[in-house]
Length: 170
Image (cartoon, rainbow, N blue to C red):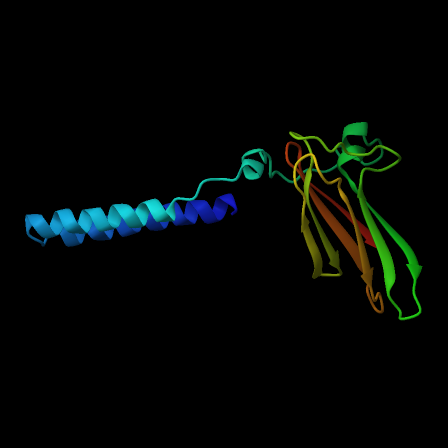
């Protein structure tokens, strides 16, 4: 579950608790106690713990090249590469997304990995893949019909070094 959803649930718990408190003010003592117990149980259900994977995702800042003319190895390591490969007899073109450019590949370790890849054809989301820590590298293949598609965009999330994007104009 995403952090934003958890925050919403916590906010909902606070609202439920506040509403319960206001209602309790108009009840007798036994009803107040009974209502408070019910609200406490509902609040416990609403609080969700982050998974071990999500606890390791510490940066969601969007980043890009400081100087596009002189990208650093760090920047190249985090930039998605989009390769348009062969078109099959049915009109589908194979697209390869890898993380890292110019031979610099992003690591896949237990505490540092590519945790997702999102891929768009023009403004239409084609795929969203989540990766587990230390198990899967930041690579994906898609087969698309590229008729009238003007651009392909890949976005990746590095659990430590944020979100990086690359667009390929066709």
